[in-house]
Length: 590
Image 1 (cartoon, rainbow, N blue to C red):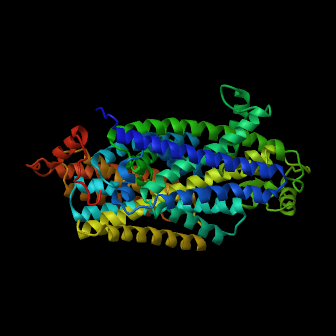
Image 2 (image 1 turned 180 degrees about the vertical axis):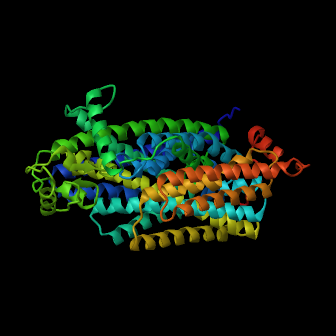
């Protein structure tokens, strides 16, 4: 399929490239000014806070500038986002989803299983679900499934499941952003939650999906800059950049050290094919991740965006791997061999937040560190290798501090992690609001609702969800990894079977409802049978079993009755794969 570019599209692309270039120049100039302030003696705490502040203000400004009252722009980004930018935005969202699992992550699964699961999930999302969603012309995944299986009960059921899944992802990303602001700006928790909530609202509420996509793109730029600059400085200073093909011995030493930390935090890490498959299927149909595909011009552009996503993910993965490895070695060299009460200030700060343990305990002060080490067997006055452990959340941003590159670069590294968390939270809240405001309320009322009221209802749902989540987080923090795993598990158990049945011509709406109920019921039964909070292996195996149960239930139901004489399912599938344009009827206002 060929899609020639019109003069209008070429002109719009040139205009977009110009705005992107201007934004990059402005960000580079601001980063340079922060570095200069660091060199002229401005207090380190102020300089470190400027990076996160710049990122938050920039993302919020993008959302405000993209405000719109057009339905197609709010729900679908105007269907005009060039594929390279849509691909980069998707890569940023996927990176934000994986960020809580950066090694060494205490109590998480094995790194191999996590990488395999998220990698396969990214392939499914980019090359299957995303292009399918774009070709259909739907505004969301529930919109697509409801078009394939037109029944009100199913529409409401799918919208409810996608809302819950999106809420778990949003809560996890909100928590990560708030914790990053607590560290980067030195704020107390309530203020950090309020600030993060305001930024998320300004990203998503004015411009909808358009704001989310361009904010995610900007967040990716901040992350690459904040991660890449310390590595470039390390190389310029003559340090060893730990890469397998450049410095295999250094890389091997870093990997061995991180593996030791992982085993200390999780003696029996979860792994295996079942866990990876459950992750892959859930990520592949996760609504906040596939959102940028909706805004591409056509299905071919969605496939091109997928290739851009994979290249960007590989590049970001290499940067993060090098940063983690270099920070691991720098942590050992800067802390091991020193007295526990004579460590750098950042060590006590990170340890007080649970990101670094000294002699097996969090120690937020020199006195606490010394007290912890005196009770450790074999301690002789200085820290040994086994006395220091670190987590991925610390290593991902600590390289500038550990190498003495300056507070400015440390602030930019923290800003990158905060920015992708805010972008992911905005995308998840946008998906939640679309599922409730568009796929439920608007569709139940019919197509006669005014555009202004329709968008107002969706924005009201979005703001209410942000405020409610912020209020809940103020009273109770959450484990971001646990929230994301639960979201992926329910996505695997309930959403994936319906997406699979979309390709089965005999499947009808009643079959899809049966599959949804079987998937949810099987997952709930397996999780409740464990009692308490399910373990990772239980979530993975239960979600995969529930997915298979849902698919088999839908297939069996369709085979037990006569096929549809009108062949609606076959016609839908034919139009999806061989049609010329959008399958769904054009939406009001689109």
